[in-house]
Structure formats: C-alpha cells, structure tokens
Length: 116
Length: 124
Image (cartoon, rainbow over all chains, first blue to last red; front, side, top):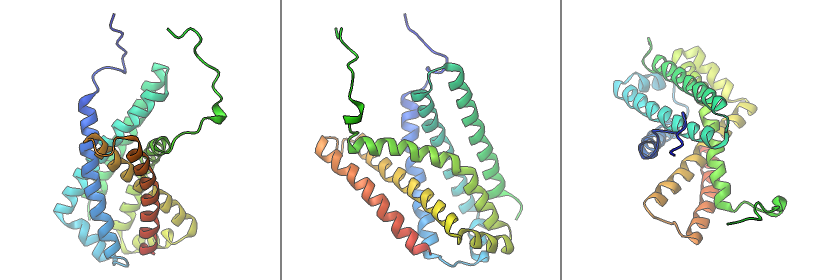
C-alpha cells in the first residue's frame, strides 16, 4: 500500500532544482549589492535613491526578491517537514510560513515600486 | 534484522563532525534569514523614503547593538551563501569524497567569518 500523506506528495526534483537555481540568482544579486554598498560607502541619500529609481534596478531587485522568497519557502518547508511530526502542526507552520513570505512579497513590491 | 536495536547511545560522547556542523548551521542561518526578511525590507524602505529617515537610518545602524545585530545577519547570510556554494559544487560532484568535504567544511567556516570581518570593517 502506498502511504501518501497530505503534506508529503508532489514535491521533489522540481523544488530541489528551483532551490539551486534561485540560490544562484540570489548570489549574483547579493554580490552586486554588496559591491555597490562597499564602493559607495558614505553615499548620499540622493545617490542611494537614484539607484533605486532606475527601472532596471527595480526589476532586478524584484526578480531577485521573488527568487529569495521562493528559495526561503522551499528551505523552511523542508525544515518543518523534517522536524515537525504531527501533520496538523506542520500544516499550520507551512501556512504561517507562506503568509510571512507573501506578506514580505507584497511589502517588497510596495517598497521597490511605491510612490517616490 | 536488528533485534537489539536501538542501542543505548552515549550521546555526550558522540561529536558531530565538521561537515555536520556546517550543515546544521546552514539550516539555522537560513531560518534566521527567513525571519529577518521583512525587517530588512523595512530598513530599505526607511533608507529610501526621505533624507531625514535616511539620516535617522544611518544614526540607527551606527549604534553598537544594531551594528552587532547587522553583523550577525551578515554572517548568517555569508555562511549560508558559502555553505550553499559548497553544496552546489557537490551537486556537480566536486569535492564529494571525505577529505575534500572535511576541508571544504573548514573553508566555509573560515571564509564566511573572514568575509564578515572584511565587509564589516570596510563598511564602517
């Protein structure tokens, strides 16, 4: 008998691959941002704001944040799946994790694309 | 097959090997980074909203405790990133044998700490 659990089916190779691909996206964005911050130590408010008013910076930031949130979802879900045995508690933690990440997504869009 | 299992393991005598330490730190740092996402977004929003809040933001991150916290976040990120690169390399079969894995685990710990110190020193 195949013993399928509500929280155990449908994930596997795809998420494994997504976790790695999103990791590469995050690495590139973080490296670029750290490099900018180090080169621009003491950057003025105007300079900082000008950087984030560029559309391509907004687009790259948004895409990288989507990668980050997706990556965080897979990682956190794996942690709950490994350590939380009772299915009800696990689903609750999955839900709270998803809400936390979706909230972050909405807030990120507001911060990056909001009125200047 | 194993009728006498589980054995009574002397847990206090079992030491997690270094690759295991790096592995659990990868998880802990990832979970910590998950928690701080909205707070970093809040900091970004503050730094972008007005010259006054940008100045307040700079004054805030100049406080020792805040600096320490941000250094912790930076270390968590850099450790997670270095350990992640190690896993990516292992995925393509680079450094999968035990001596190499032990060496790269050490490297992850050392390099992430050095990078944290370097970036921390350069940024203030």
